[in-house]
Image (tube, rainbow, N blue to C red; front, side):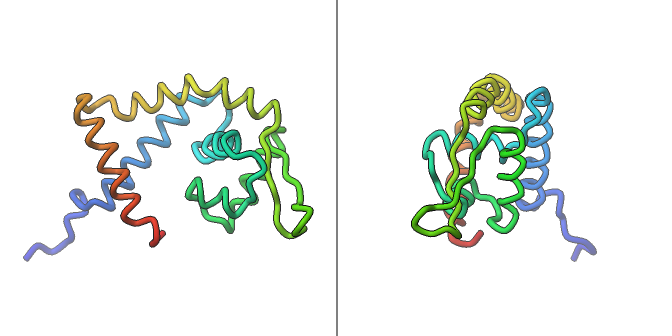
Length: 146
């Protein structure tokens, strides 16, 4: 029996490393925009569903609701997102992308597309398609647990 666990071939380790690669490539490609992958996801989710509440939006972008407010605060400080209390429930915060936020998201699309291509670059087109299908299946299979 081996003395240590073979983490180099463990799915969790490989997924963590793939995430590190994905974030690094994203940051290289979008550096001039001063945006994180989560911030970009939030902007696009709000463009699709304006007026979404913070808790629902955190779930849509798969981000920890406890620290989500600070991310929204950074987007507000950039002038990209507007946050208002819900008239029906003042504790609930509703969010909208500002005009500047929409312009920023549009300006980032080309860089984000380049990042996505670079991330998948080492794979053949059929492997890229297979990886995306399998990652989607993996995530959907664990949606209730994380």
